[in-house]
Image (cartoon, rainbow, N blue to C red; front, side, top):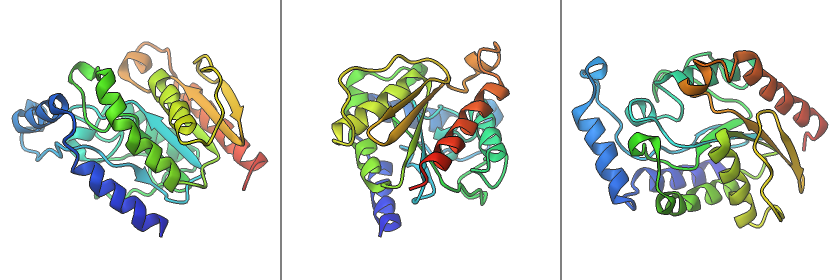
Length: 231
């Protein structure tokens, strides 16, 4: 039942046209393309979540990249951020392979589900507050349909805070104040563990602010928390 309901939600997400600015941008990018992907057909729609419906680990990022997820149709797929993330997930045992290429490449996530605070690629990677607000209902609905989640990994400050706000809005946690974001920080709230990680963006990985060892440490911590709280 959960799998069917998630599919229904994902169909609604893919069909969404609530934010005119984002619709115009994602479709413009998909239509005009860049030279290196000139021969490809872009997805050009909102992105649904991806992964195991029975997941105990939930990853929340910011938004698809214009020539990454907006091209391939899968979260964190088709750009450098995704290459970093899926290598780490594979090393941690959450992914069947170390590379995510496209929606139909056969990659499988186990005990892990990936989503984002915003489902469309925003211009200059900067969503407007009203766009974040409109999209937040989809994240809250996903939380309801993923009852097995025990560990939430926020990728970047916005992903981390969006996850906390969504769980609070869904009535799952009490959150008097927002915890401070710092890479590797851990918050245990009402039976859930929230882990913060720098986003695997090129801005962070190319400068050495985030290393593979640092990202691996976050997922090792997720594994440890699952062993401590398996149900």
